[in-house]
Length: 389
Image (cartoon, helix red, strand yellow):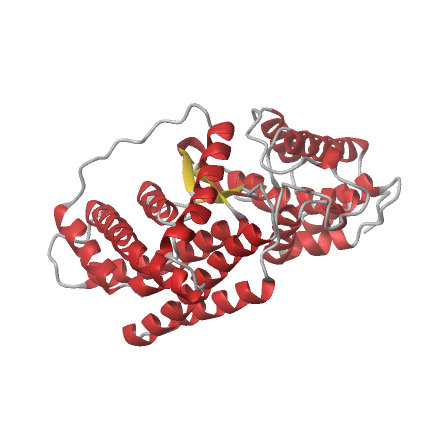
């Protein structure tokens, strides 16, 4: 692959693509957002092209060393998921011929790659309207990220704790035995609850007056996107996390503390796996007319509604257990926990001052009741619920 075998038009197209990508980042878009848009587009190969441009920009801007950790995590996830793009970018030498090398790499992977497609994606990115700025854009990044680089933009959650939680939930999702899954999920919930409460108490005892509140985007894929949002919202409502939904982009934004955001994200992923598995089982049963889209939508809606009810019912008991573990009265713990909810509400209103509540809609009755029954069997115990803060 010689960087001198490409046309000036190809180099110009590659440069324009990365330029529009950088401009989109400045307008509030993040790497994962653009990959999500490409997956929803009409041209399948746009996903690999977008991943290549994002990884190229990450190398040129040294985002892994400079960006907020959430941004760097997105880059790492894209690198792991799109191996061909990672390999292509790894061959590039970061000098004056970098854009020529990028264009050559695209043609090396596919000699018939249409240069016009690069221009089409660049134009699509140029038309993206400004979006809510959730992370500092590249133009504001320091030369080298430090622990104090992004005060108020993120607080690291203990990696060891998160890995233990992920491991327990992974076991719950993989087992075919409901009782075993319930044990794993209960242990994960207990760990999440203790960590969330301990974080709140440590925050107060350290004399820190401000509560760090972040926002992160959660991208949802078809099918049954609205029903998945319902599940996410129910989980968020029970975990001090507020959720806003952008239907045109199939993207939700969750607002909460770093601890609670991680918790909701993991719990949502786990319960979505359980709901999907239960729905497929119900769908394969001999139910006559239940093999329909309306049944599945009703199933997921019923599952989400019942899960939300179970979480709220468990709230009082979990709060009391957390207070006992902390050797303090519930009446003394509640004001501390309420501080977080107030901070989350304030940040949510700042970011999204003009939101409106979505309207309910009718669903398949058979699916609804089947989903509620499946939620009762989901791996969740009231005593392991996170407390409301």
